Amino acid sequence: MSLKGKVAVVTGGSRGIGRAIALRLARDGALVCVNYQSNADAAKAVVGEIGSAGGEAFALQADVGSVDQLGRFFESLDAELIGRRGDRGFDILVNNAGIAVVGPTATATEADFDRVFAINVKGPFFTTQHAIPRLRDGGRVVNVSSGLSRRPMPQYSAYSMTKAAIDTFTIALAAELGGRGITVNTLAPGLTATDMNAGMLDNPDVGRAFASMTALGRVGKVEDIADAVALLASPEAGWVTGQYVEASGGLGLVMPGFGSH
Ligand SMILES: NC(=O)c1ccc[n+]([C@@H]2O[C@H](COP(=O)([O-])OP(=O)(O)OC[C@H]3O[C@@H](n4cnc5c(N)ncnc54)[C@H](OP(=O)(O)O)[C@@H]3O)[C@@H](O)[C@H]2O)c1
Image (cartoon, rainbow, N blue to C red; front, side, top):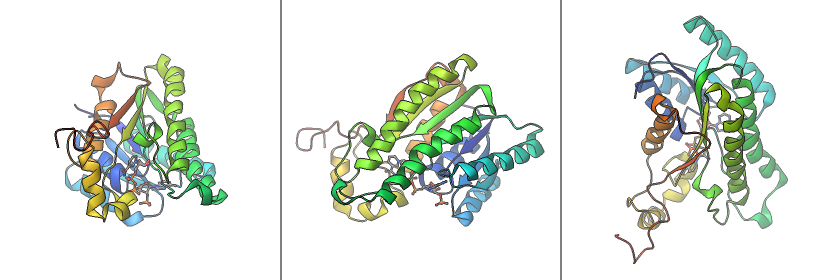
């Protein structure tokens, strides 16, 4: 799958799943904009790694939960792309940036609720709104959701709600942009080892428990998710739109004691 000549924007590309997506799309030949919120050194390191491997990337800061910051982000993106490619168009948007708030509904605060909805729902919505006039016909939007949007867990109610909103956004947007040949799909990771859940996976029993419920017998790696995003972003996926694709190794398919593990 070649993305030679394509331009990709990955929100939250400095760490975790977004970092792996940025590296993978660059390896496939895309020029990648690595968005980050606060971790400039990590974003610079991703850009450096891509450059050392012969690819091209640049980093741009913005809190996707702030519509003001998104406005400034896209002005800077325009300037970068005009400088590098002669026009502001791009081909692939990966709405990956996200946070989790974890805790029982009974004690959730309004501030936490507003924050997780701002970053996980308002962020992809308004990032995409800014992207629409810039995305080239035949482009790709990949929205990173979560398996929890369909199978919520205790302690993750608000987070799961944000991801269900993203799943619905994908379907509406696929219908809106289909006339331009732009595909829009949801990629829903299962449990994947990143900073987001490092605290949970520090306990090896948790990793073992999830692995025992997973058809492929382990917890996800960021590269697993990046490979699946690359599939949806590829020219070969041009007839796939409005879909929910789970990349979880088959989490929940095995009942411990009754499966193959
Ligand atoms: N890990 C999992 O098990 C899992 C499972 C299902 C779905 N997901 C989803 O996958 C996506 C990536 O998660 P992850 O596990 O890779 O998380 P992570 O390791 O915590 O990394 C989060 C990334 O998002 C960026 N970010 C956070 N808030 C942002 C904001 N307001 N504006 C712009 N960037 C922001 C961070 O930038 P800084 O470096 O600047 O902080 C960082 O690059 C999220 O949407 C998450 O919900 C993860």
